Image 1 (cartoon, rainbow, N blue to C red):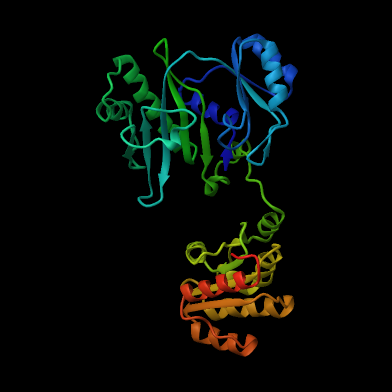
Image 2 (tube, rainbow, N blue to C red):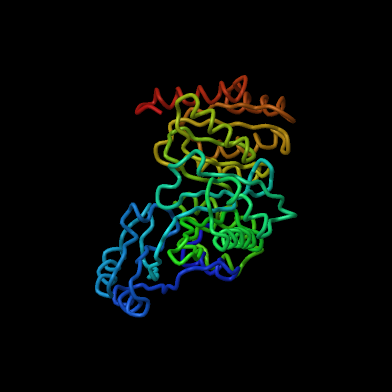
Length: 381
């Protein structure tokens, strides 16, 4: 779950990280009042996405009238599909240096790592090379201020003032505290600035709550921005089916998230475009019809690849659910199967008996055939 800046920064402040004074407003007149209180300010669109500056959603204002005009222009904008309904009016800070720091989960090691950079700002993701360093952490150990100061002083050829270096270490350690205590998937400060007065201040914050922690963090989750769902995605959520709508024309139905993602990758490898992510797992017998209906309800689906692997769920049980659904829905798209694992012989026999089809030798062959069928149906894949 993503958080807008105004909801993320209080988490930093609560951990002792310095942030500018600000006010959240919903009208241009309120923005002018906030600027009257704060002085020269920045007017920032509040949406749960990046690239606000490039979209025209962040403007400097020297006077209340300017803040009013900027807020009037920003409110009602659409940025990356999100309507701007509120803006954050924040005091300006005299910036001497822009930096970057984040803590993110590492899916491979199952531990977090810190990313720091001597450059920060709008285009930091386009920068590479020696300005970045990655420091692995142990989730059961964490990081203290002294350890957090070390990479800033040792990895970069920088001559930090001792007071600034101390603040950088404390800010990095406190950011880990935010990550750890709030079940974050990602917490990022960009830019983290050193002011002309030598203070270290967080001018922005991106916070992503681990979705699996939403029930454990109900008060925090209430402040987040739920992901916008399409009609079909909302229907899938109601039915308890993991469905994500994509822009392709090859429908994908598999058991297990990993197998589904792999099937999608193979479709792309053969030049196709997946129409969806949809995994049904061991509940295919009871949810087969709903899942199949979701996949085929997306306009423009020209073929379907079904990939069953009998590891945690039997292939024949999943096949029975799908075939029952097929009989009720009577779809007219070509379908291509890959079946392997526990119960595969029974599942293959059922497929032949009910649909008169043979599965393909493997996932690669089935996905390739589905891509070719979609292409031959017109419009390419």
